[in-house]
Amino acid sequence: MAIPPGSALTSIDTALAQLLSRMAAVTDREEVALPRALHRVLAETIHAAIDVPGHANSAMDGYAVNSQTLARGQYRLRVTQRIPAGRVGQALAIGSAARIFTGAPIPPGADAVVMQENCSVEGDEIVVMQAVEAGENVRRAGSDVERGTLLFEAGHRLRAPDIGVLAGVGRETVVVCRPLRVAVLTTGDELVRPGEPLQTGQIYNSNFYMLSTLVQGLGHDVVDCGIVADSLDSTVQALLAAAANADCIISSGGVSAGEEDHVRTALARIGELSLWKLAIKPGKPFAFGQLEGKPFFGLPGNPVSAFVTFALLVRPCLQRLGGARDQAPLQLQLTADFDLPVSGIRQEYLRVCCATDAQGETVLRLAGSQSSGVLSSVSHADGLAIVPPLSAVQRGDKLRFMPLSEIVGQV
Image (cartoon, rainbow, N blue to C red):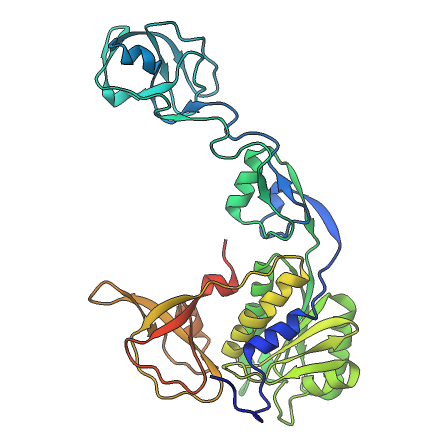
């Protein structure tokens, strides 16, 4: 359902499109050793230089045989050699077999491997107890990766299995995009770093640690800009310092319309404010603009709102800014196991857990309080369920569900 006209709120789809249109990927490149390439974005397209495996090999422990010999009714074969992994055997003589182990090259003259469980050993001979077909239990050369195959295109973010594939084709280094330097600052006189004593009215600064960890999970570097006092001058100075030392800036807090909220005013004074207030819940007071040519993301101070706006808006922007290809998060259709009254004009993102009902179906259940200040409910959740504007939820309804692994990233 569309947002009512005159609401002065921007839909999430419109906001994301606007933000992505302003992201210009960094152009700096560097070559890194493969063990340091996890989460990095490829700046080169990679094709396989070799076949994997490079030779036909045994898929299990057993005996290498010629299937034609067995087809002629000769099931008693003399074992003439032993081939462990890493060794190359001799050509198989007619009427013979080779003891072979998983991963060992198939010797010339053999075209199949008989499982050792299907053989009876009698001295230096075996009796094959069932028919064998050509190619049985043999991994052909190139069955995993063929030489010349496109493995990864530029813009691909490397995961742990990708590192294994690259190692398997002999790559020692890869060319990747430079990590972004992301300035993270938090505003509020009430904030205290963990480890310091709390005074009355103060709270620990959870947002910085959450946001900096999310940034690092994308493979980027964090510039800690500290806690900014609730004054316009302090905010202006902090934003200018952040812009001088980073590729982009993320702040939390200070973007609402209160007297002590100075981030939006500061940005409008020294930079460009192009977006404010979203039609989502939680996360309405979100700001975006430019400062010294650097993208600025002003997240709400409530921790759940900061998390949701980072996941939905900032993360895709950092991906594009860091050279990664755009990839929308996976969304599933799952059944709600709860009721909710008609929502407001903002699209809601509910913290939910996945559970199994009596019929064995996966259902969604609310992960505790949905208050924007209750971060523990995010920690307990499996993902976010989407409720469109002006919609009620009844038990049994299908809802769009985004797993947390899709919107914050995991190896």
